[in-house]
Length: 259
Image 1: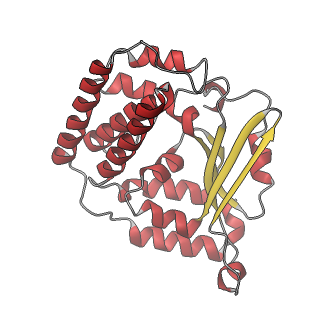
Image 2: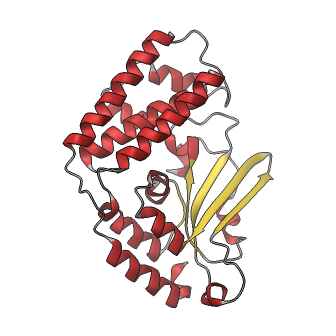
């Protein structure tokens, strides 16, 4: 999957993970590469989970629950953001679509037994209220597009709405926009916009689609997301909290088994 995602050639992502100070439970590629519309100059966004040792958690210092590292390697800008396992699981239980997309990303750089258990438990945190996440993210990206007229936030807007609709309708997290275009009813011009965005990370929409058409189509997708949430068979509350609690405790107490 990594070879087909448009990632820069010759960059060893696994080496980046190996350099981290704490054991890494998993690391995946997120951002435009996951969403299916990277540009030649897109940054590489790595996301994942690290495991803090027990002494770090119970000592007097502030534990590093979130670590962010940014660097340039072989001319490629990359960043790695990881959360401690406990924080990540808490985010999973808060209708947070971002962390679920990172967890379930098929672009896996590093994995292990704990990652596999998290993936297996992910369906138990999905609720109909995840629609709020995708609705809010789409609104934020739409405002950014209105200011910049760039293709990137516009594609993010469509992607968020279609991911939300698909999740409400099927109970599955699908973040890859080209795949969504094959699975959900969507404007035909999106495929051309993906091709156009590939040439420049901050390329503009230009006159490819009129403002009236965009307003119409985005409003229609917003309405479909509302209806999909109303009709969804997803539960109101997550069911996996006890199992996730058990996993966090076991992983912490058997740290070597996480890598």
